[in-house]
Image 1 (tube, rainbow, N blue to C red):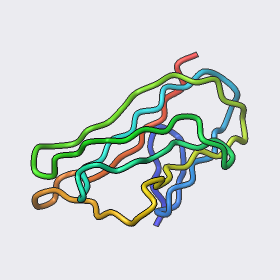
Image 2 (cartoon, one colour):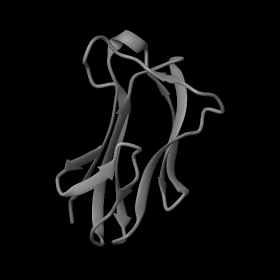
Image 3 (tube, one colour):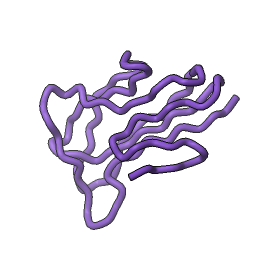
Image 4 (cartoon, rainbow, N blue to C red):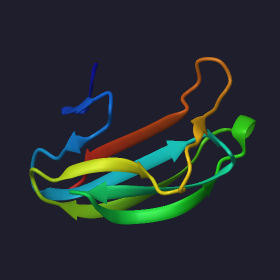
Length: 105
C-alpha cells in the first residue's frame, strides 16, 4: 500500500522521497524486542543519524527528533543497524513504529 502524510507518498516498505529542497524535521520512534536496537535514518543510502534505542517493550515508544537540510529528490529510509532482526512490539493496535518528516524552512 501507499502511505500519504503531509504530501509525502511512501510505499509500505518505507522509502520516502523528499519533494523540495529545504530544512526538514525528522521524527522517528519505535517499540521493539529485544529492547536495545540500533537503527539509522539514511539519506540516499548514507546514515544521517544512528543510535541505539532502549525501547522497553510495554512501556511505550522511544525515539528521536532532529533537523536536517535536504535536497529535493533525496530518499530517506529507516534502517536496522542492530546486526540481527528485531520485532516491533506493542499492545493491541498501538503504534509500533513511525517516521514523520515535516518541512520547517
